[in-house]
Image (tube, rainbow, N blue to C red; front, side, top):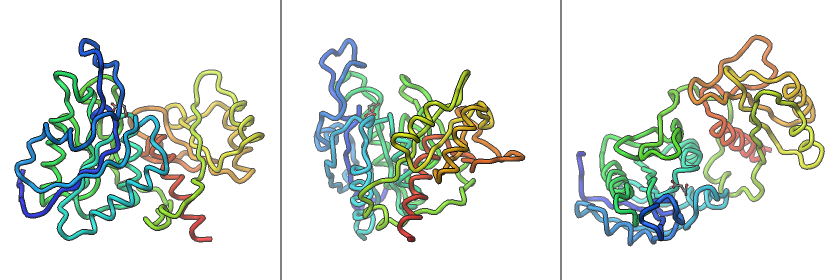
Length: 303
Ligand code: SIN
């Protein structure tokens, strides 16, 4: 993989199954994420003699990923990428929300060095754990001199950080690359400094269109604890039940941003005649939520 051994790699650890432990080797899907320290994980990895340093930023199951940890990850990633003697950064993360973190980091940082996020579907002490091989691949990826940007490295595949989705809940290879990342929204991207200085993150909720969808959930939340925005995961090309659409129009009239995406795994949404909401283009609903949060941060920073 075009390895060069002059610069060091930084490994930032956040937890996940890759650092998980099971106490029942016959049923490794019963485990606790975020148990094994990063330096212990690295002992199973053939680093090819390259210099590396690590930081244990957290030990979370990524279902509990927080904006505070995103800020920490952003700050540490940028810090290390800015060092001349650093070739690239590897991040260990749980698979469950990694697509959100990858989208966030790629969008805000757009780094000109490689950042490889990696993960595992089986805990570290499972006999056939996929973690060591994934970590080794991520270490190799960031040693290449022809790659840059945030990628997700898992099960022999490399996905662009801003176009990856977890599609399978069990397989060792659970990710797919979604649509081309070239469809950019006309939304603002805040600077790293803007993101690091946020104390109260904008609140954007996701709501789903489905049979019998009505606007009650949206109206109830708007009446009691209104968010700053909504992403609606519509059916097909982002179509909405008329009651849900009416409730979201009311939310929009009260100043909330509403973005229309699709609950379909592939294809995104296209603009339609008579559109009343902004549409998310190729972004998945969770990516659109991150994009809207970033847009709202940018807007606030400009005030
Ligand atoms: C997590 O996302 O932290 C747990 C699940 C996983 O890593 O596969």
